[in-house]
Length: 326
Image 1 (cartoon, one colour):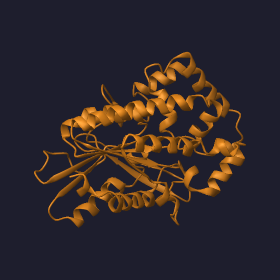
Image 2 (image 1 turned 180 degrees about the vertical axis):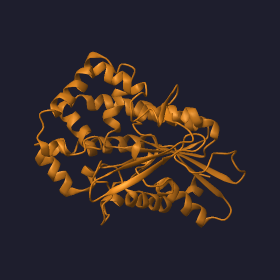
Image 3 (image 1 turned 90 degrees about the horizontal axis):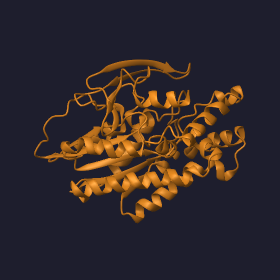
Image 4 (image 1 turned 135 degrees about the horizontal axis):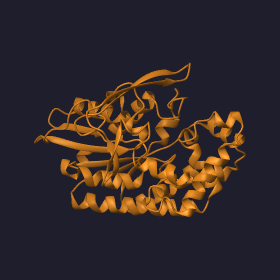
């Protein structure tokens, strides 16, 4: 059953996949182009109808991708579902907010920020995605790493995903949830908590996850250098890392010690140290998000909300000096 579950996911045949995603030989899977799907979801306090709309190439953009202009600075952005966006409309994404601010501030250059975020993506996808879309000739490639589950997913996306070890860990994790209290089951797991609990159960997997992370980022760095693309990595934290009260609640609920509850941040800091050593430009999004006075994650599933996208878009505009990379 576990093997079938894993295999069917990567075949893109699930009910949450078949209308939105398709298999791809390079990126593993990408959005289906030219679709518009409406989802109604949320809590009684936070109800939302989201429009999942893609353009001619399957990006989360309202406008189609056309031939690059002479004065165009093209920024290709990728990431997982947080970048893909749980939003009412595409222009609310931090990618489009950043683009709007860039173009309002410069009358000479045209800035085209393309949202290539795709749900479920992790480091292997980020490499394949760049390979697939190198022909678009981006000047900058931004990977918005979600540090709440990208590390845990890295081993799952390898070709040995149905090995005995992986199947055991997958089955153990799912089986363990059956015995959780109702209070534990009510917590949305996949956006930060599941990774925390996974490395709590299998601490030796942290080394493998980091090794794969560095492997794919090294290959991305090489490809960007070859194609004269500026590589930038942003690091998006989960709610555990930005909300002290929520962190305390999770730590108490699952009886985790200080080291166990901080595993996401530990892995993030190790990655930042490596990125700095490799001279890969990187920005930690934790400081601007933890300063927010309003909610920055949806209660329903703990994805970043429109306020977070606004904060990130403004942060990128203020922090990344594109003239430095021209």
